[in-house]
Image (cartoon, rainbow, N blue to C red; front, side, top):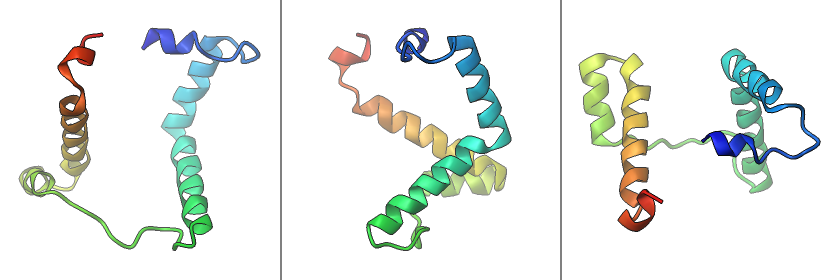
Length: 96
């Protein structure tokens, strides 16, 4: 991960400044608002409603939410995403 910060364009401020902004914007919800605005705009450009009207919930997320309540739903879905990404990586590239 550390090497990703080295790939910032040369005309950006120092990586510590960029990182500080990233952390601040993540914590205060700015990144979430930007993501939502871009998502809604992309859907509008595709002639769709700005917000999705359908959701997909897998059985593992439901089981986890039932055990721990609504606050565990995000954690359950994040575990699922990580495991899918991990299983999609071939053994030859996993440790590269």
